[in-house]
Length: 109
Image 1 (cartoon, rainbow, N blue to C red):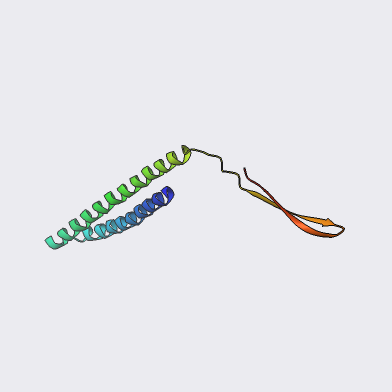
Image 2 (image 1 turned 30 degrees about the horizontal axis):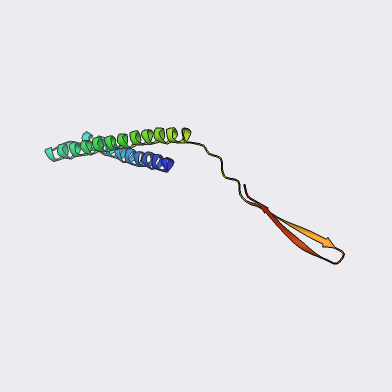
């Protein structure tokens, strides 16, 4: 379960990071073509969105690192125990001059 959470956080961080990269590209394009106040406001909005996405991606990656650490600690410090022995059954044929049969024997540990 810990590995799944770590993977989900890392994947989420990667997706949000790609979205942030797209916002950066959009911001660079908008920032290079500012001619009016509306253009400047649009560029600022793109920059703010990109900053927010970067912070979310950083948080998801940090969560993945923490989850990986917790998973590792729990995995390597888990208690060990012997698995109980299973019951064993043995089926043996028996042949005699006047017939035959099967013997079923078992043991429990």
